[in-house]
Length: 242
Ligand SMILES: C[S@@+](CC[C@H](N)C(=O)[O-])C[C@H]1O[C@@H](n2cnc3c(N)ncnc32)[C@H](O)[C@@H]1O
Image (cartoon, rainbow, N blue to C red; front, side, top):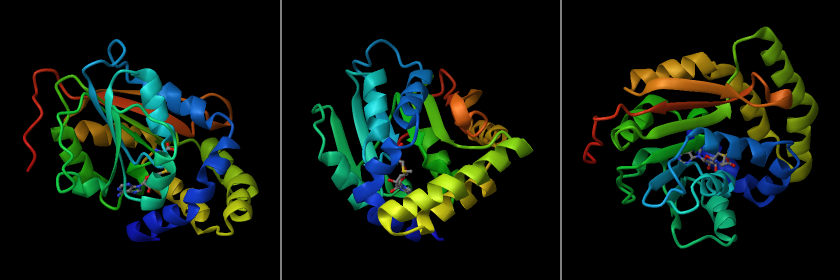
């Protein structure tokens, strides 16, 4: 499935996305856990945060809980997912923008950001390094970049659990609720193909971020879903957009 197909599939899945994730144990709690792991200062007052790949707003809500006074720009490439997000009540400090991850400047989205949250996004990017390179330039000195995703710990056990959960629960439930299975089969495959969590941490380092901190989730997602938080070195200012 190409990148364009992924966002089309999210458009098609938007109406039932929240129903599906609500049935996924720990989905919202684990997003909140990752947002807290960014260790944003105080109540977030004065901060500008980016939630890239915000979907229907579950990750935006997690970011808002971690930094209630922050200004949040939430971006997604699927108009359908964004339409669902906009149905909820949000403080005025939260704005939603329809843009592709590699087209932020063209959509008028500029840093410096005091934190970037990317939940279930990076794995879906056709060219993650070009997007990461641009994003890292937009981080303020010392600011965290948090990736929350299905990134396996490299153990055979985790691959086996992931495959078993996908084929016994996620793919059948996705098909039952949405009438389509392509997105959920893609989810299974993309996780097996994407970086292990150590490789993801190394990828962030290659983009100049420091000290990546890896932490997993409780329950069946242990070793399967991780937060990786790395930081722009202090004293390394955000660069002007290209
Ligand atoms: C699995 S959803 C996660 C949504 C949300 N972050 C959450 O945690 O619930 C992934 C989102 O990333 C978006 N996405 C995928 N590729 C994208 C891209 N290249 N640019 C912008 N958004 C993208 C999809 O449209 C989808 O809404």
